[in-house]
Length: 121
Image (cartoon, rainbow, N blue to C red; front, side, top):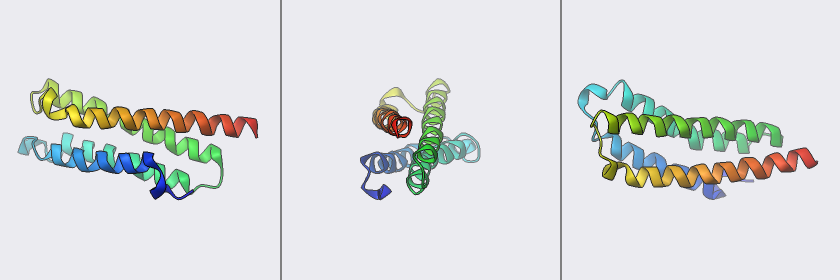
């Protein structure tokens, strides 16, 4: 399986782009704090999908998908913090939350499907 062909990876790359655009709206004082954390979290999602797809076992693939899912939750929390601190509005984050939800559903589906395959093998 080539990770670039996965809709999951493609959607998570789209998420990276949208988050980077959103981060530009954060106040300057957040350049090395919250925005840095958000960049790491969002980049971690497609990176772990790619790395996991290159592993030899389904178990390893699932482990990297779990890490990507953790980064998804981390990013979601950071976005809520941005809203809570009035750095961003709910309207400004709507597209990113929608993509996050889509990526999350795809991650859960991949994890469930691959976990089922590894336990039945």
